Image 1 (tube, rainbow, N blue to C red):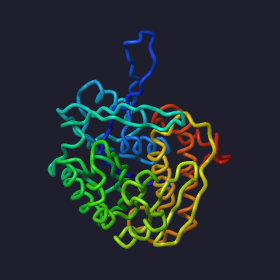
Image 2: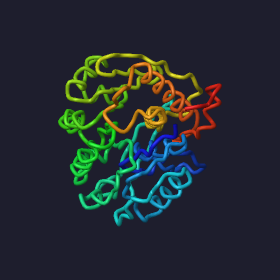
Image 3: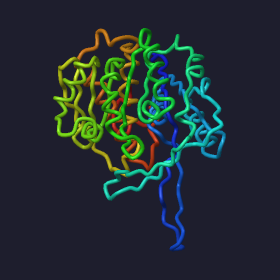
Length: 320
């Protein structure tokens, strides 16, 4: 079965990585297109899911880089907005384990300026799933507009949210205050163990899943780094191990996991509603597929998710 279209809404960010230069008073930055929603859209398209990206792309040098990157990955930009505001810049510093710490340059940038009119023009008739999250869902003035768009999309499409908490830009309590509402809108909530600690400090994954199920979301998936992932479907749990790989860095790994999860569910016709008919075995299969996609992303520098045929490196079948 060919997967139906998935629409991803959110930011595209210039991820800048410091690289050494000969002169002691110079710093070279290697800039790659990033941003959680953009990474997810790219990963979906490379896996073979028709992926449409709703973004506000600047006309500056970074915005032109974003467009080229997205188009080369076969992402549909037919509803992307040509924005007058500048692009968002994130400077990443990597530790010895390849984990990234970010500093952001995001004041009044293009990604957060959504208007109701811009999103009202979007035709979702061919969309099985709408995925969003990260900063576009909490940064004002556009965050509330995005929430309204999700509410309007929910009757026809599966709703997927990745909070992707960025405490340097938005205080965690802002996410906490809105998370119950997101759970009432969403069918799928995917987040990392770092997100969990920021959203529910001291809570275990199982306790968090029960809290979010009670708020309305059916499927919660918490990625746990090297410990794999915990998935909870209406309170039924399954743990899936991580895939062993040589880690260059972890940038974009969670986004790639989400794309793998959604691609796998979509390819089996399980998206397009309230996850009716979805069982725990199918959730486990989708998470295992997501783990393979994430592992390949970790094996290369930056947010560079694999194409479908590259999955043969980790899977004998290479299939979805």
